[in-house]
Image 1 (spheres, rainbow, N blue to C red):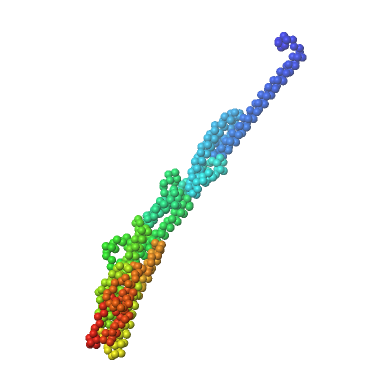
Image 2: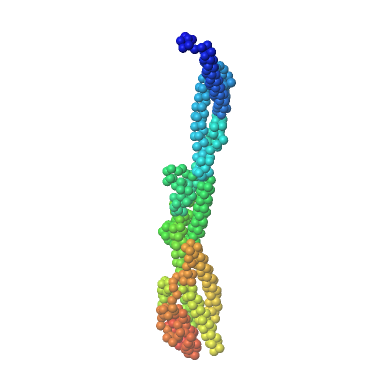
Length: 487
């Protein structure tokens, strides 16, 4: 007022200025009130949101029993007082949620790893978490549910790991018996099973367990087949030993084979006892014994045929050099340069021809009324006895054919083992030309037989009688006619 008096303002001007001041004050007041109202609304909104968040966290964490007495519905007073009361509760719930989320994350990560190990696919780790569980249900009940599931997976992993280790141990035992490469066999199933992958645990997936089971079944089947082969070869080898009277020292070298003959698959655990080398060793020994026995038996048959020829020639009053012939035959057989079956067939032909010659000679003597005697015994009687002996020899010949069949069977087995079929026509040596065989002096005009044992086609008459056919390995010494008739 004093200022206006000094200035000299009129009353109207003074009223105008007072009205302006009043209006400005009202505007300031209104702005202050509006700001305060807005702040109150903001505080109210924060309070509502805090109450809602607290309620949501309590529901999510399952902490109703712990926070119900101081919950948002029970807080009263000014807005700032309510906010100051709810803020610690909200911060506590937020911290609990963070810690709870961390626990869930750890458990879910372990579950994901175990699930991936069981499933056998580590790429499933990314998609193994349940997004609906995260942030919606963090209660202790849900956490315990995850923990229970984790324990189940851990137990499942332990059981599977025990199965895997058991299968690996079984495969190792079978591989050792069969002389298989254990690490290569396991590595083909899964590289982690060898224990050489530091950053990876052993695979326990369903595929790995199935592969291990299949491998065990395959190895067991291989064990059974090999044991059956060794037992079969072993029985045949023992039979050959009995026939050959094999010394005890030689048999002791194959004591392990004899033991396997009476063993079951589950009892065989000695390293390498069912290896291919073992089967090959038994097979070679069996083949050697069989060839030795076959050679011995064939030599025995050849000598019997030779003796039979000598008897026939003696019945024809012919002196023969039997010792020299037997030495020659023995040398041929031992050298392995002659096919024994052909030699036997040739000697059988010689026997047949000699018998025919004896019959012709006997018929000639009967026509002349001269009884043909040998050692003061009628030749017919000798031939009857010979017929009986011949039947026995036919039985021996049948056995010889059976032995030959056995040899062919052995060759078939060798083909199954080694993949190639050995020749069954020349088991003891290569065929040679008959002219290569040694012979004793005889009729130089006679045609030699295939093996030097056939008689000549020419006939010699001594004292008006026809002599028998003379092989080139014998020296015929005809007796005079007077002595012959005297007999």
